[in-house]
Length: 322
Image (cartoon, rainbow, N blue to C red):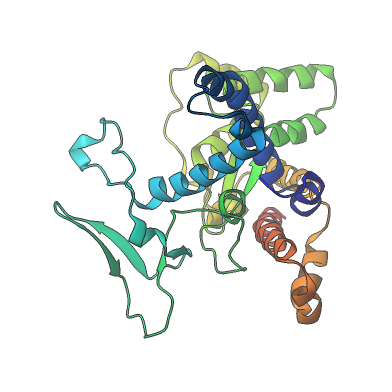
């Protein structure tokens, strides 16, 4: 949030981070002018004019956002299975546990009991070795967005790459031959929106070993690649019928998908890769040269890890759909 806008866009273009930060900043500005500033002006005995500052409020919000994310991710008491319909338990302040840093392959977990909380090692930890907690299953883009750091590749086993839903629509539209096909595809997209499978701001999330939005992406590929007759029958019938194994959108099953599905997925990945300022080869050259990498600033190194991890997942998809 406090990186210069130009630096943020230059280093993180295509990763989704600049857009997430801009949304945060817009929400902060709106809340400050509509709620916070009027409240402070209504209570001049509590808030002097020198603290009525948007910049100061941004700093306060950034602090709360970072810690509330840690607390809600790691220090929120889980509900019992029979309490699934209840509201989540409120976050807990746990200062001693909060000093522990995060890695995906953490060696300690916070455990709950009626009388206390305990940070318990999940493996032997030698004397002098750092104790790591987890902030939750967070991709590198989420870590740098909230905390300003990323895990070096390939350490973050929770890393993901996003394919924007509208990018899949764009890829599908590229394959239409005339206005009639374009209108048919738009009708199918509207149908997917009605099913709440897609949206203008949504994304399909791909992990290193699984498709986290399998149902949404499977349904989208299926509907957009249907024949006109199949789509007409789909709208007329009640439900989807039995799911076929060959339609399962797992990472290992992608090479066995229908050719039209694979082509649309591949075209969507290629469009996604165009959003980055550099290609995978450029990132590999930077990471492979220790002298050059060591001369990069902290922000440049962290942003590089974010970009590289995402591109590796996307290029894996290219191989699977080739």
